[in-house]
Length: 114
Image (cartoon, rainbow, N blue to C red):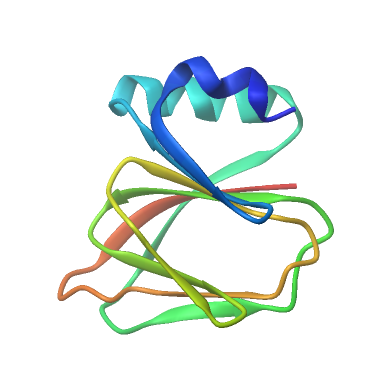
């Protein structure tokens, strides 16, 4: 399911089943959102204040974050991933995770989920 999007991204790496990829530009972000919505996912824009975030024991379906502004760190187990603006980050289904805004300003990101 995810490999069909490979033409849309520039550079990516996998860490076990976790995926982090750089999206080329804002226009491509909109295309990605449209594709996920067409597959039944909900795409919401969220914000976190500096030093704030949330945690979840794991959702029933895969979820993604796309950082639009600011800074964001996603922790899965002992690993921490620092997202850059324009990166898509996949959290596999049922994987406990935490997000936090590590920056000095409010961040904005897409939360893509079922």
